[in-house]
Amino acid sequence: MPVEFGLSQTDISDKQFLYLLKNGNTSAKILLLERYRNKPTKRIKLQRLIRQLEDSGVKYNKFYEDLSTHQVAAILITPKAATKKLPIRSLIHPTHNNSLNDKLSKVWWEEKICDYERSIRYKSLSIKEDKVDFTSADVKKIRFAIMWLNYFMTQKSKTVIKDSCLSKDARLVFLEKGFDGLYKIAKSDKRILKKYFLKSDEIINKSFYELASLNFRDVWLNYTYRDKQKIMKAYQNLILEEQAPNSYKKLPIYYLYNSSFNMDINKLTKLFNMGYQRMESAEILRKENETLLNEDGIFDTLYNQFSRYKY
Image 1 (cartoon, rainbow, N blue to C red):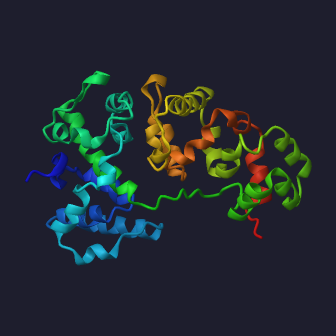
Image 2: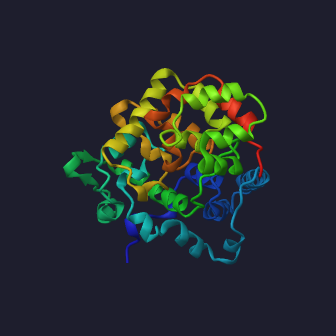
Image 3: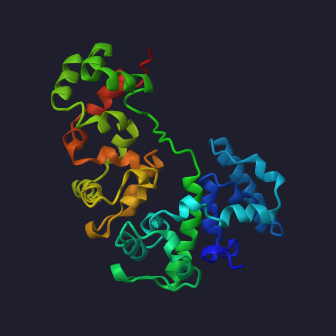
């Protein structure tokens, strides 16, 4: 029986394997080591890279060591049922060229990956309703994106953001008691905090206070005004057109990419690398948060007052 979508480890380039490896994919680790079995120089370099990644905190599943190479490959190239039901649009990825990502972003969110299994398998993908045609080269990249998406969706779904401005306990205080609660636990800068709170709404700006971090600040400050407008408009577009239903909150933040705004997907990659990996974390980009996002000093003040707070 033909493999679904025509997926095969032999079609994965070394570069793509390395991308998966750096993202913690255990199948990529084992299969790439096997690929370099008779290439000692490359194998030694790979083993060195794996040790460096593990030292930096990347974890690989030891369970895979007891499996055959065939079983490991099957895990990589066999998408789960839940993954196949995701939108074609969710296959947008930074390793694609702009042309392919533009095409994917034009596809209506109701078009699911599973609906085009045969077309992808035979490299004849075309979505007539959206007037989008994909080349054979596009489909080859899409196959890799399916494998990556399948792996991504099986990882822990909880958004983990480093250097959050509010600690877990501070966020609970905010959810339970609002700005009054935060004001009471602040040790200093209360006059400044009051100024920020007066510019905010506990309900409308809830996502800002839950998701703000110094990492986001660093990325945001390096965006140009036009970059900021594009990315916020892209998020607003998804909300208005209902292209991001509740069930899609766990999708990669790359789902936000929109060709209509001439976006640079590398801007999303910067957020991804800072922990804003899923669409649920993109809620900080709501139009309602724009004033706070550009408020001078707010990230630092919140971080200094609430990042280490514990009950």
